[in-house]
Image (cartoon, rainbow, N blue to C red; front, top):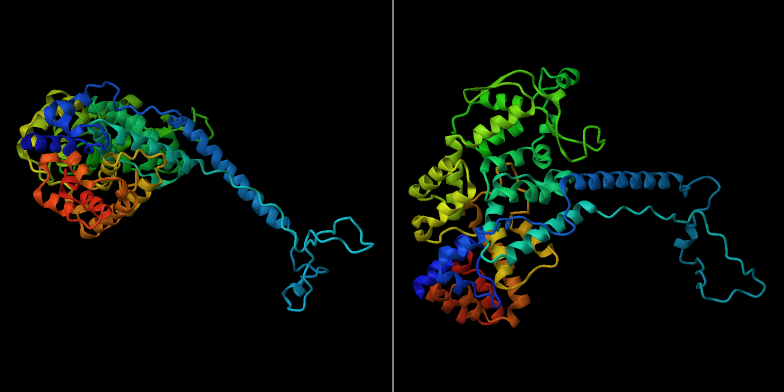
Length: 510
């Protein structure tokens, strides 16, 4: 049973988000057939899709944010107009009511006091110097409301998933092809939709399809400013006296496909930037399509053939860029780069070379079939025999905690705040390279101290109603070390024991 428990721990922690609390029986199920338990989740054809009532597609979200921005603008203008029309207390002929600041000033009678005999029943005219006009109301922040709804849907899916391998793949690819919600209101509005539309449909599909969906999604185009990139010889480039923005082209090659040292040059970056000029999205004026929809602007496209990675691509508009992406997707350097990143994410910072080679070969022979690559990972002995040395990222740690404690959130506030505290704000990495996927990033002393603080908060809030010894059996059973068991049993309180369990190697490592 101990050996089975160890394999179950690998199945749940390395490839999923850990065991769920309650009566789930995850560890028992995983111990009976560890590999089959993980693979079962991959057999669901639409298991990665996230279709939740109320979550809207990108164009509808663009309409919403553009309308919201107009409302905010009108509200600010109304406030400014109201302030301008309010009589100044210093205008000539007005008394500033200084007596109200004097100690000998008479106090006003209470509103309920009876009027003096013979006094008029008509209300006294308000002092214009004291009158405060009603301030125009600011519209509700639909951008933040949308972001929180998207975050909640993602968190609930991860916490409720059987094993979590599919959601782990979603998180991996979303970080690989990252955008940042900190870019602005459009990016924050679109962050969840980008993941739902460009990532989720393809995590078990073809890499080339995901690559195309990502690079043509308005969120990515906005994040890397490709809507501002104009072919120098295009009609728009000539009229506006502007040229290329190479951000998207560079990140496609350096971060999304070939990787650093993948055999491309600066000339290739410039060529790809020319090829994808005109890749944009419709704006608020809706002249060229529904706001927030992908748009190929022929007037901004650099005319003529381009040479990329030694191959000439003829100028046939949008198809020129799509052909270039398709070739880059199946480039040998892309296969090696993706294989290495997957192995590093799931197995070790320095993954076994044999495992990387196996994934690389599968990527090539299957033409980027990501289901086949994932199955090759699960079928490899190296992925199961390597020790659990990776530290969970803050997101994985918090989701694992929600699963173990059987706390399905109804509000994302705790998770979003904790992610900010731990240095992994949701959908908001500091740069286009995403969050680092190494222990050096997440196992630093300050980060572990913050995890301990959050674990202590959870222990104080929930510890009285839970027995951490029972939870340890749900987490690891026979795979738990004697040191961890003794530490939990010797804790002074249940609250302290729960915090120690959440900080244990069996819980923190995957």
